[in-house]
Image 1 (cartoon, rainbow, N blue to C red):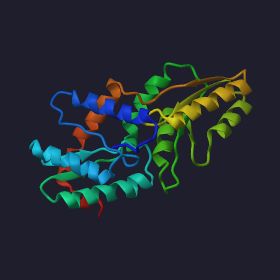
Image 2: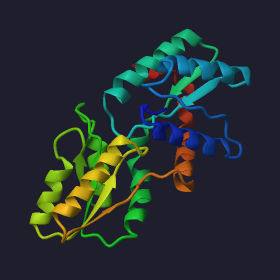
Image 3: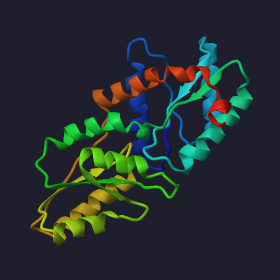
Length: 243
């Protein structure tokens, strides 16, 4: 389950990810849903797939939020929508809300660090969307600390431009940028445009951008393992999780 976007690329990537997961042996059917900008509300999307799953003989649906920070969507909007869907479905099929993807910092850090190791960079900057929700940026800062990067945000304070200027003023000449977003879209395009402008403004500084989350075997296996490793959630209903 992802946020949803007017840009077609995130949905295309989400569909590809679901397709790759669906090809894994002994793995149950996979569907996608979005919180916003979908033809139907999220609770209706969940209900439709749950009913289809029930017709195939399944009694549970695992829901993985592909969000990287713990903001209002993760803490309020998603549980509310899932609770509506569960109430409409009744007790014959159970909806299980798994921890959001970005909470898996200990699994994500090695994956990103492996890509960082391919380049010789003086300082790395991890840029995420950012959240105003209390504690919402904590996993971003934890991840940045583990991979040795400076955390910045697109929509809240500690912006990219300020951090780049601080590094340049301290004599840094090779800066790596890690756009920490689930899928490419408008914001990642804007970040790339900003880096191009910085390159023109500071011609003696080299900037490098890496894509930390690509739909490759590593990401597919990580998400597959997350589904399987949270089997303990099978005995919990969404109402238990909301208590």
